[in-house]
Image 1 (tube, rainbow, N blue to C red):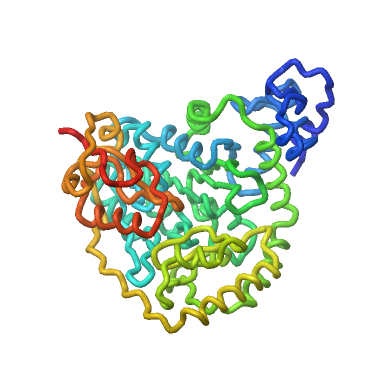
Image 2: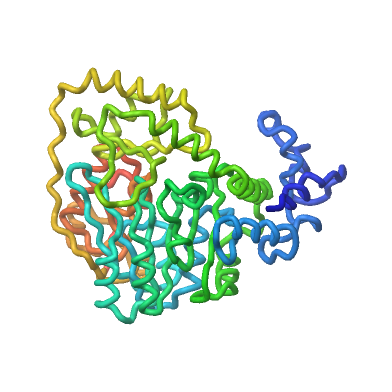
Length: 465
C-alpha cells in the first residue's frame, strides 16, 4: 500500500497561498484553534494541482482508494467524508428508482430512511426479534429475508445492517446466496464492522460473505478521524459509474484533506499491523470476567470487541450505570437494560482494569437490589409494508397533534433514539400503541431523540389525509 496522498499533502510547501480555505494555511485561524491544531493547519488544503480531486480522482486519490480496496477485499473503494451516511445514500440512489420495492431490515440506521426519501423507493421492512430480558434487537435472519423475497418477487434489492450496534451479525453468507439466487444486489451497512477483515477471531466481513455494496464507518473502529468512512463495491450487479454519480450528488465538493489522508493511513495501518494489533487487544480482553452478564446470544456471530453488559440484574438501567461510571469512564451506548462499551485500537490493559474495578465496586453496592422484570413485548411481524413510503410521508401535508391523539395516524417524521439511530417510528408507518409506549419509555429513560419536530415528544407530526 502506498502513502502517496499523505506524501503529496506534506510536500505542499508554498508560502503565499491565494486559495481557499480562508485561513490560508493557519495564518488567519483564531488563536485558540491555532494553538490546538498547530502546524497541521498548513495541510488543511483544497484541491490543489498535486492533490487530485475526490469528485473525479485520477492521481494520488485514485491510488489511495485502490490501495484501500485491495486491503479491504473489494473491487473498488470510494472515500467518504460525510460519514457512512453519504455512502448509504449513494448506494440506494445507484440501485433504486422511484416506486421500486426494496427489502429493508427494520433495524437500519435512520440514514437509510433518508435514502428512501431521496429515491422514492417503497420499503418492505424485515422484522427483527427483541430479546425480552435484554430489550435489545437481534439481527435479521436468513429465514426472514427468504420470506420477504418470496412474498415480494418484484423487489429490486435487499438492505441490511450487520453488525448491529451491539456487535451481532446476520448470517451474511447464507443471506447473500439467497439474495443472489433472485438476481438481486445485497447492500450491507457494516458501519461498526470495518475491522472484521483484519483478524480471524472476528465475524466474517460482509465483502467476504458475498455482499455487493458495503458501507463501513471507518472512524467507528479504525484509526481515522470522525466523519470518515468508505464505500465498497464487489461484483457486477451494480455499476461503479452509478455509484460515482450518486456520490457526486451527496458528498461535499470541498472534502477535507485531513480526512482523506487519515483514511489512507488507517488503511495502511491495518494492512501492515492490523492482525498484530488485534491479537494483542483480544488477549487483554479475554483475561477479564465481568461481574455483570455479557450479551452473547447463542448461535449468533458477535464482535468480541463490543462489550454489552446487562444492568437489569442489579436493578439499574443502562443510563443509570452510565452516570455512575462518569466522569472518568465514558461508555458508548446506554439502553434501558444494558450498557455497551466499544473496545478499539486505543484500548489498553490499564483501561480495562479500571473498568473492571469500577464495575465490581458498583456491583457490590447494588447486587442486592431487585432485578428489573423482563419486558412484555407485543408480537412483531416478520414482514411489514407501511401505509405510505417515507418519501410520500415526507412531502405530504403535515400537522402536529398531541402524542396520544397520534394513535393510528401515519407518522410524518422518523424519530430515533441516539445512539444508535435506529428509528422507533419511521415516516410512513402507522403510529401504534406500542410506538407511543416506546417513545414515552425512551423519554423517561433520558434518551436523546433525534428527528422529532417537538423534542419533548408532547406532539408528533402526522400526515394530514
